[in-house]
Image (tube, rainbow, N blue to C red):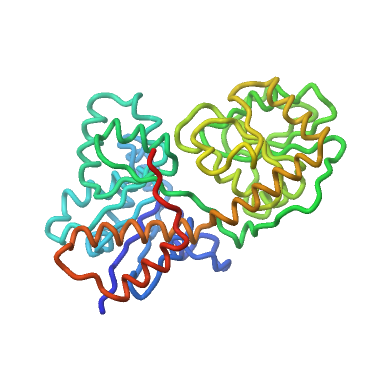
Length: 385
């Protein structure tokens, strides 16, 4: 029985042949967990390029909002696939353009278009860009996103269904460790990690820079004002998984300060910190409550410096409360299975549902039914937002 051919089209730099080579982690984001006798996966490949070609490709990507050169280089696998999965709009808009240009002659593969930042940016786009993007989005067969608020906004913008897919992390890098004790150091160690554009480093630094009883380490590759640095606030990139793990291990508390957004900015760090048993303080924005409730993590209003200070003070004064929340978060993580495997299996479910709908006149194969039933036992239920 011929397997469904799924091409996973990711951004340049994530070719599984080279990404963290030798560590045997599979595909970034865990799409390889979808491999089965029913689904045969291929992955986008990075073509070697000199600095001039790289600059040209990146320049065109900045102008268009997607990397068409990278997509064009992978056109053969995309056009020969039955299904194309993408991780962000930078890939699905580009794949949609290719399929509109070439797809009809190749059977028009199903396109699963997953967006991250697109909806947050939409209001700021000009008329022409919105028109072009809507034409490209119309080629997508299924739209997905990671947050209920993001999905609701997308439905309003695009006038079609959008499905929420719950994000997950690699349990090899971040094995689930339910904490058994918690006691802060003196000074209290506060870690914050992230490269997303919606991190609010200003509020975090302002909250603790005048307090020698707090030590803050911020790890980000984004440019941060030198004015935020202080004797107890250190800002530097954490390069590589080893450095990130060392920072988490050092920390007493992980803080995820955020600006208002709709795309669950910070969810990766929240999941990693919870997996490692750390109490988490996070800005109450971006549908993060889709993943964890106030019984699991400590929520504070965005940009509220006094609330951030009061919350940390309360945690330090009541270690039992900090431990209780961290343990509850760990158990909730396990129950919901916020892993890359679960993330991939949600794509399997969506794909199989779409393919069955497309081929309603063809009886479902017994093996496919069994596979779907098995995965349905662990996949999060679709939410009505």
